[in-house]
Length: 76
Image (cartoon, rainbow, N blue to C red; front, top):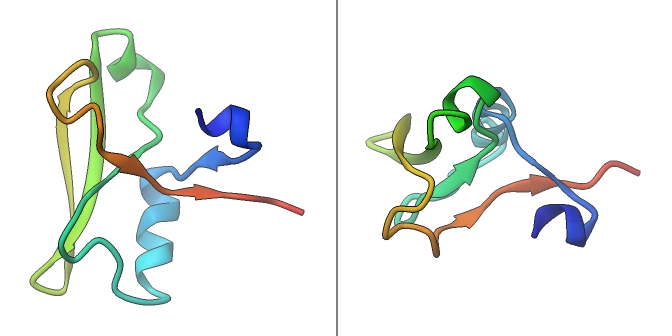
């Protein structure tokens, strides 16, 4: 979906950089770009901000969290 929109999904590092600009995902969480070795095993990672700290979690890519949003960037 991100590719169809013409954007790149944020990496964990980029997501942490985003959180330095403001407080995002304080009540939600977002998928981030998952390293290929994790995706090959069927996993995905997502992040959020709680207690003024960025947390990274994992789950199966086909989990019930499939409707979770993602954070992306557009380079111009």
